[in-house]
Amino acid sequence: MNKLISDYIQTHTDEILAEWIKTTKETADERVLRVVSDQVFIGTSKEFIDLIISNINDSNEYSSRLTDFAEKVVRLGWPLTFVTKGLHTFAQIVFKKLEETGAITKDNQMEFVIDFDQWVTPMNNEIVSVYSTTWERTVSLQKIALQELSAPLIPVFDGITVMPLVGTIDTERAKQIMENLLKGAVKHRSEVVLIDITGVPVVDTMVAHHIIQAAEAVRLIGAKCMLVGIRPEIAQTIVNLGINLNRFTTKSTLKKGIEAALELTNHKIVKLEGAK
Image (cartoon, rainbow, N blue to C red; front, side, top):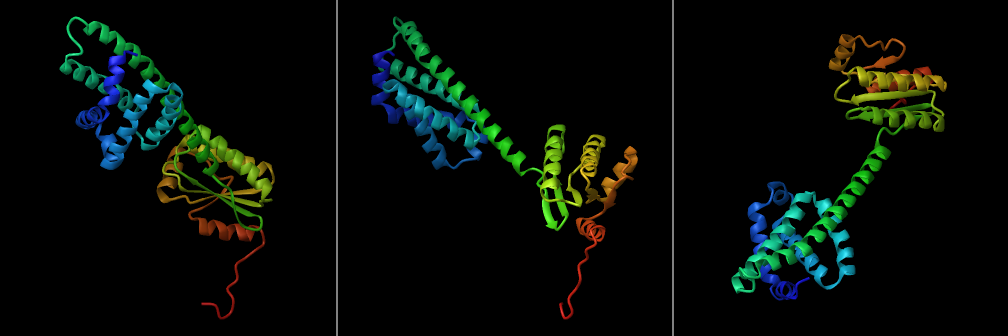
């Protein structure tokens, strides 16, 4: 890297940082500024400038700090364009300052342009690569976590388990539901499994198909399946779509479903004498 550029950056860090924050705030996406306080924005900005400077002094330190910084901005929800544009803004500020000091003239301008490009471009490519990898890993971990939390089979009484479904059901999630349902039914020795669709906003032909498949799978391993949480609008949709649920017991609420399941398993809830 051009020694004049590196020396100027290291001796004018505070001045460059102040100019960078001012310029970035004026041009940044509102989403970036809205999700963090001024204190966090300034702190993260300083960290970014320090990261760029570390690339001048110690490449090993830079690589380590780049990974940490990428993880931080991904957690903050800052887009990649903010980071890459920030690097471009930094280079512009330094170039302009060097012009003002007379270090860059018309005679040597092209030489400095090439020096800046050879320094900034590889750094930009590395930032993009690390950010993308960090983002993909974060999304992958979130997806795994959601799958683990998605559609648990909960034992409520001996032989009776409930699977509450919440949110949209697509093909991939339906496979996860099926797997959890079968494994859970065997593990808990379920006699009756209640699939609660109270939290499913829309039941269309595809969703109904997935639910029917899950219910059929439960029946094949020797357990009875009951569909509960059928709201009036869902019932109307099912009728309008011509979906046949006659093979399964259906109840409007989870409470009614559990009462029916207790009857099927020869159990009942008895109110004790004197109990209020």
